[in-house]
Image (spheres, rainbow, N blue to C red):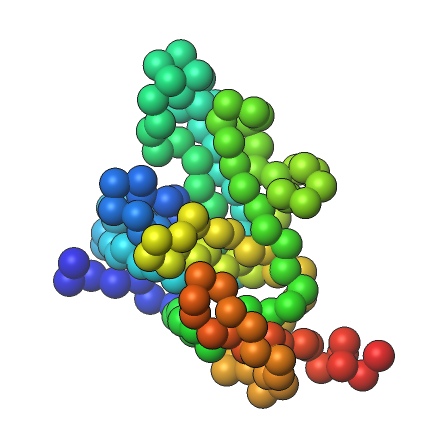
Length: 165
């Protein structure tokens, strides 16, 4: 793909079951409506879930998955494996159990997040992490406590206001 999303571009992101990557569809610009990138690691700001009920009903009727749900937000350049903030919650979506994205830990509806990190590491199930903090300085200046996920090393990050508490 010769075209790539630019920082601040509004996009729709969904997990591509065939490629095992996140597909990024432009919602604005010259490639509006087209997939402009496929990534293992995607970061979005100002995130809202989108589910097409007609597409969901088709999944229920045919018992075959199709692209009808994803997250919309403002694309941010990926920090890759530089870190995931410690104040995140995992979100998920299953068309067979309900029409909305939800937090995996409580099953509460997921309605929006300031930031989301979408991870699709090779050989691992895809993960979507919703972050509750408002803004942050990256690369993280307050990184500490390394941890791993899927064999990859990460640095935990704590916002300055949390460190002060």
